[in-house]
Image (cartoon, rainbow over all chains, first blue to last red; front, side, top):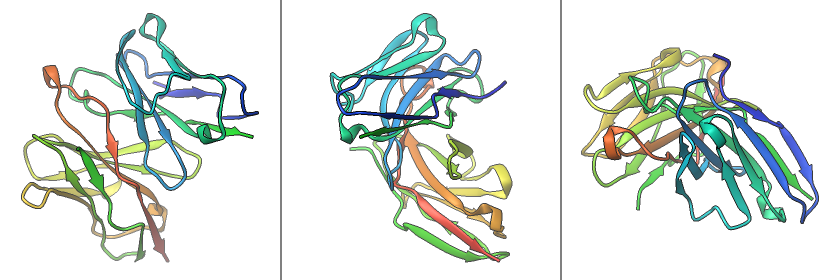
Length: 116
Length: 117
């Protein structure tokens, strides 16, 4: 068990460019979550998947954001036409969905996005 | 609306003294409550949870928390603080969905704990 892995750890981009982040959850965790964290704030929910199905999306997830989880394994979060307000830490978490730890979300180290 | 409040931006404690980090919540129905800790440049680490049962829950690194339904609180405590406990602490809440599992977490703004030698 290597934990939740996120790539890249840091991303610097120019306004208007597209970026994509990847998250590899803990093996056999069927739930995967994306959060956004800005300086001085707690993480804010963006979206989550159960297996390959995207079950819920926050109103924070504008139409410039899209997330996928093909085959219910890794997930990608894409931001199109980035804006300076998109600068934040993007966190991924996974949970087993069943069993004694089903309610615990395990977080990756995050991808820090800076939009210039 | 569901929410979590951490009223203190920062808590300062001397090493060896007890510490308390406060959290109150607003959730309709029965809450699932969590504490996470975040060290610089690292992700959130799970400390402990309350789902049901005993109001006093024990977690990692000697931390514990007490669920108080009447006061809608879930304060984090440790009897004797260590310098290495210095970090950012987040309280979070969710609620049961279909099948007893949970949806997304709602986090407080975080409390910076500083433990001085």
